Length: 342
Image (cartoon, rainbow, N blue to C red; front, side):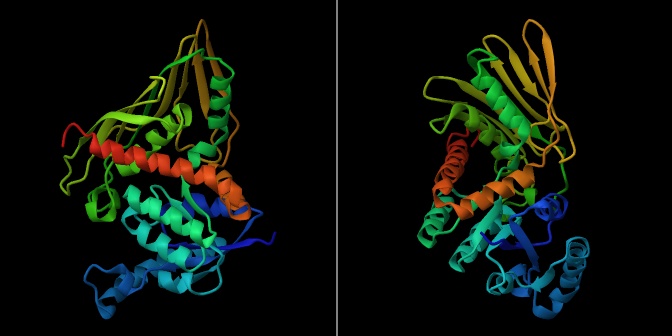
């Protein structure tokens, strides 16, 4: 199969730091370029002339992409989508923009690789999945940690009975406040701890409890100036009564940990979500004795790109991927509905 031509909507930090280095190593994709928003797409009350200084800032940022990885700059997201030069697009925009640009990409016949969450509303995610199916296209939500080597090793250890029967899963992901101008703290941009770091812990629990998992309760603390939840927690359970206790926050001390408590031993992975490509995560198993397993470094973004390509090349591989995405979206919706603090 020929290489897939791919572009990027928005010169974001994660696109530059993680996506493009992984893309450069991929045998499946050709990088075409990055698009910056024109004045109509940016909104915010700008007229074409008043937008020019901001556009120049964005062009300067996009120039780093071309300097480091080639490709070219497109002015206007729609101009990239309608250029005829790409088969797929990476969308690392703020979550509040995902639905609009995922939809436009699919309508243009383009496969979509979108940063989490796919959208800010479960019904919209479901509608995008249906549209992609109608068009014969792939839509892929990027929870890259699921494909890291350490997660496969953890799943294998649990499956082999190393921990005995699972009694409890605990998972935490949080980081210090990043400033009110960050999109995470803007409600209109799709901000909020649940949609950002909360999705990670939900997705991790889902991997061990399965698609039949449901939310028992949640507590979303909406103490932000802009009406977004800054931190929260929830309890999930599967049909057999196994539980996961999850906590997340974007005004917290940094934590990024998975713990699985079994009848025979307890497993801890202290860097489960964000290991750099050159970092060797450690898995700790405590039973009668303590055992430390150092996994090899792995590029989870490169693995996600491989999975995305597989979904493009083989329609049958899309179904389980989209089902996992929809399950995560459903659980996030349930967390909002069962928030005891509303």
